[in-house]
Image: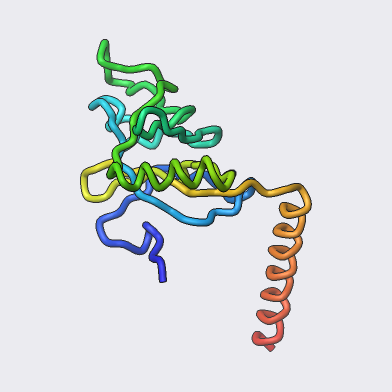
Length: 160
């Protein structure tokens, strides 16, 4: 049974990509470190991070995240970097090769799911995802609404 990052000890979630769960089926999850500068880490601690349109690519045996927006640190100066620059992710070489094979062969895509602090280090949770079709999105919404209605009915019944 896989444990989510929120249940592990020493974890503080900085941002989550809720849109990814709406647009993709998440098949598997991986943890990667992120190569950042000091002012970027301070900005993430302040919670000025957006993963909405972010995605990951593999180029030259290295993993990169594109479109992850980290706002410039307010108290920073010349050391502030471009908010949407491409950032390198840190993973073992064999894991990157495995992901590259899956992405090329099976039509998967790599999507950042959340950014969190594990102790003092910034980590990025990457999902190995398959895209949802429109009818899949509708079915998911219908299932969620049905579950909500069932819970409401059970709560009503138990309160009497």
